[in-house]
Length: 89
Image 1 (cartoon, rainbow, N blue to C red):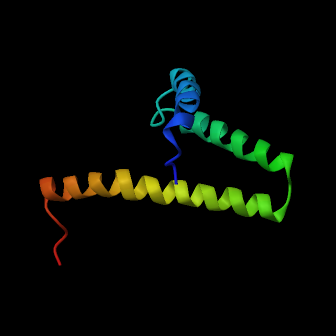
Image 2: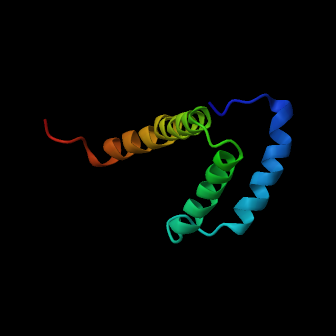
């Protein structure tokens, strides 16, 4: 989960802001985003190429995916369903 203590967020937020200024729009250049995330994950795995590291990285990626879906995608889809109507059942 991304809910780290506030005292640790300031340093990360600064780094994130720098990266965001460099990254193009994900809808236009998804490969750039893929490259960024792939390099971070692959470089981390290269530091400790083990089952434990792979398992931890895969678990973290899955948790990121699920949290994004739960917190961002579901509310967006519910809004659009209200605006445009639900599927006929």
